[in-house]
Amino acid sequence: MNHSPAHASQTGLSADEVAFAQARQKARLRRRIMPVLGVASVLLLWAALVYWLKVPPFIAPSPQMVAVTLWDKSGLLWTNLVPTMIESVAGFLLGNLAAIVIATVFVHKKTLEEAFFPVVVVINTIPVVAKAPILVLLLGNGMEPKIAIAALICFFPTLVNMVRGLESVNPQAMELMRVLSASKREVFFKLRLPHSLPYLFSALKIAASTAVIGAIVGEWIGSTLGIGALIIQATYAFDSALLYATVIVGSCFSMSFFLLISLIERLALRQTSQQNS
Image 1 (tube, rainbow, N blue to C red):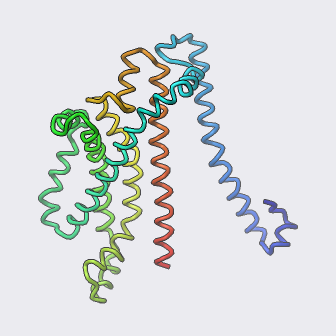
Image 2 (image 1 turned 135 degrees about the vertical axis):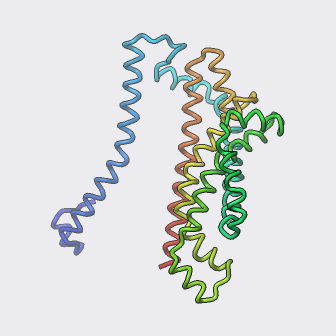
Image 3 (image 1 turned 90 degrees about the vertical axis):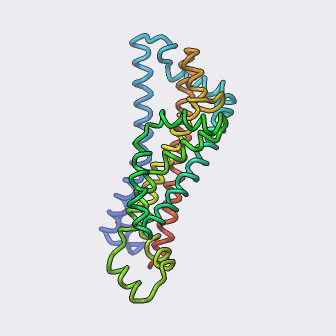
């Protein structure tokens, strides 16, 4: 886009507006280029260290070996990614839905919050690797324990953020709703819920990554299929190229899930701001 003074005079933009548009365009370009440069520099450093230190391939493969493995074993990687995706998404939905419902109950019933919030905290302090075997014993060796682990990991951050968001409503706005004789339902949907969305989406973005971690940890405990299971198999077989390729595939899915939630956040907050304006 041309932002020269002549163009500014033609479009009716002031010099400050032209400078602002140029700065904004440079910032947007920088945000796109810098991550690419960062990834490229890491790959170059990785390749250089493997070459100069003469690291054996079974300990640390070169980026070229990993790239070849990603291509040659794409079918195997995809076959193992699908169950992890299902477990992660199902656990994400289940855990966050339960957290939102319970947070809503806690906000309206303080006695229940005082009684059961400490219980939730205690359960959250139990390490995931300790919960996983228990859930496998209770739910079997299928997808159910992996979904449950992913849901448990998502649950606590969303519960805390949602309670905080629902309770941090402007007191003056709450008083105005009372003066207007608004019902609890109206207060919740027109005031509490819109105000809590930034808190909720902050938790959901964290949960998008942790749900994948939970599913993978569950697959470590007892599974023959999935990203976690493939990591274990590649480790025991000393197939470092497949191990790195599997980790990259899992990381790419986790990042894609995070970006999807970020996109939904932008759309939801924009829609909410338009309704309030």
